[in-house]
Length: 81
Image (spheres, rainbow, N blue to C red):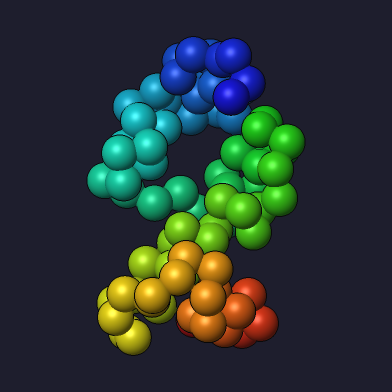
């Protein structure tokens, strides 16, 4: 996306490459401060990064939504879980 290697991206936001790799592989989740740093690094809104985390919460509570951008998406956009 940005043309940066994992090592370069991790260095730019001040974390270890192992930590960034864990986030990418969904082993660990970044905190708010690091979400902001990632959003700035990749020129995206934090909400874009957080959507997958919210979707995971909604799915665990309500089951798998029929459509990716359907009713559940609207609910979590209006009021995060």
